[in-house]
Image 1 (cartoon, rainbow, N blue to C red):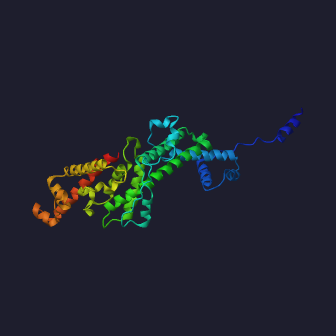
Image 2 (cartoon, rainbow, N blue to C red; image 1 turned 60 degrees about the horizontal axis):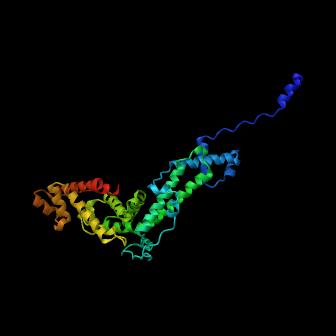
Length: 351
């Protein structure tokens, strides 16, 4: 073949198409954001001049990354890996053992209408409560097992959808548990609210404590969730409410009806009395950590152990110090009690 002809043929051959450059991180984030806002994979492919399969890989990669960043807490149980356990765990909520529907409870006086509606949600029996906690943790456990196998660069749509489905079902169960216990927050908030407090802020704070308690509760120990949640909620209130503004606060005064807020129709008398006894012992233990003068001031100012309440002035005369000095000592003692309650007693109860 003539060299000139060969050269012409070479020049006439179509140039090999260059491979599109890989998306950088900013482009991937932009595509994923647009997809979350409703843009289809096909529309994004047309916009970027890429194949739909290529865009889908980017979307899956970003979904997988977000899932790997998400915090998922689950209380594992040996039964979760048993082949036949799923059918029992995922079964419908069991009926009460006595076969009777949960009794509707009348809202406390003074509860606003939108909070009163919480009392329309039936309380869970002990068996129902255990079933829901087991189911929630099982669903999250299965989601975690699948997530552990994720490789963002190779993530598939079915695998990602399955993890999302498990997490959505776990969230639905969690919300059911929370709704059934929201009245507990209202009851405890009413016990702690004072003239200078915003009741609705207390309820909001208590709801956050309740949500955290649902995540941390180990149902396998056989304890009642309402008792555990009550400690968590009261711990938060003690952190956020100045003791000096609440001389009627049940925790500080040691009144026997402190744990009344935790009681419901599942609490038997023995358990209730045990809770009362533990609370009294806790209060006595905390007072024992104060020095003699601080303990005298707290007992006299709050009327503990049957003592009559005394004014700053009368205590000052009895102790031989000024009224202002009594105020300072009282504040110091209150700070000690708060720290002891949080760091030692209550922290151990909800850990």
